[in-house]
Length: 596
Image (cartoon, rainbow, N blue to C red; front, side):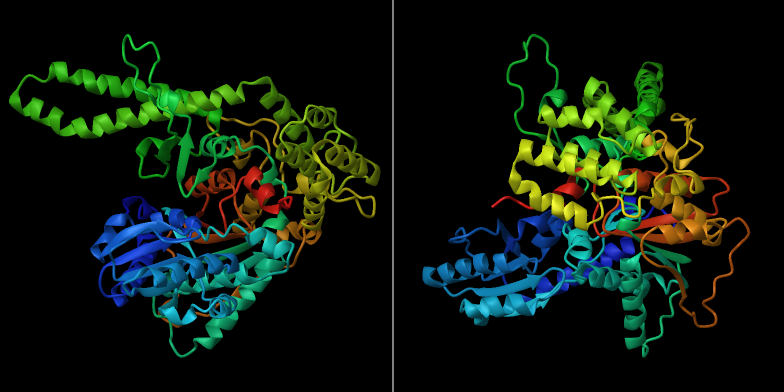
């Protein structure tokens, strides 16, 4: 069991166990010793649901990464390919299978598509002459992966681009399937709210799927009260801004992949006397970040400016606890101290790690450039000078700062001004193409299609109306003891989370005008429950809302939703699901066209 998945109102271990059971059943179909050949992208998500020990129990002896040419030698009966349904991967698999056939003893090949089988892929394998070699061709519907006690992700890296640029609804279908799986495990969700075109599609798919399964009545008492489906393009602003929570900054600077982060090793080297700094480790330090670690659970969602005081307080408590050993006189007291030692040593190790990470982040956040960039972002978000060419952005282009940094700022300005004046837009585009290369014209085109970078139509800027009505900018933010969600960006309250907050109380009727300005329809659907399953809420009991971000969510938004869940009089606790955990950089990267 993964203990950190069951601390919240919804025990996500139930989902993890269901997914693990399905994996075990598939492995048992392939009798005998096995080697797994992994599509590299899947190893991270799979690591969250099944460690190597589980695979070993089911006779998995070797694991390889999917690469061209021959497979490494392995004395096993079965070779199983775990892959996403991508045509380019089929070509590599065919190469592997054909070279194995020439090699000698007959092997049994199997293929497991994650999350769905694909006719196109099977046709490609057939054209390459290897389809008949596979004994089992199956799909493994790993739609939603539990990351933490209140967080699920599909980790579908192309979802935003597919939905908003290519009109491909595959990831929406997987989202709907994932939600059906959740309802099968946790009961029917009585109310569905949504905002946006994709949200409407997912709700329609869910209702259709439910109609198709009318034979089986779901008799599980509902755990969730509401589902809120939100399109990412309803709030394009939030991911572009720099996140200022501890977890958000780790992700902005180093990138968190499947709850792991890789950090520069020199900060983590044990300091020995008289070493003179030689033999510094060269391999990146890899740390897992989730709420199973007590200290991380406490500081992850705080504004970075509030983290230092927590760390120093913890350091005092831990050193005081270690000092206790001098007061232990009797055998009983010594025994008690020794029994607490492993926990104390783990706490000390955790503190050392997070102190090092905080120092690494502080080096970045105290730099002049970070401050300048943040100042410009905050000016845009509070509505200052959004309609003219910005000097700082000009300087960044002239000094050839990383292109993604420039694109994030230009897109932020565009979104905060409901599009740029044509003259300003043309100027930025020309400067970017002349400095970074004309191949980026495709990327600029994608950003335009996605609505991130566009010219102002109708000459009207709606952002000030949205900002004032939804109170998106707060001047007096208390970063140490926050009273409002705007602490996660030191002043800006994420639009997406504000919508969730207002839905919970007083309801969306109070903001009809703004909802009409924001893209896509807003709607409400009820799913009738059989008598006997209707929930009678106890006085003081919070509602549980599942909020699904279609197109990605940032750690700062997650922190803001956790803040709302913990409010004394909030009335709602949130469980968060998404197609992908993103930050501004990974989001823009996914929209960039790779130059040929």
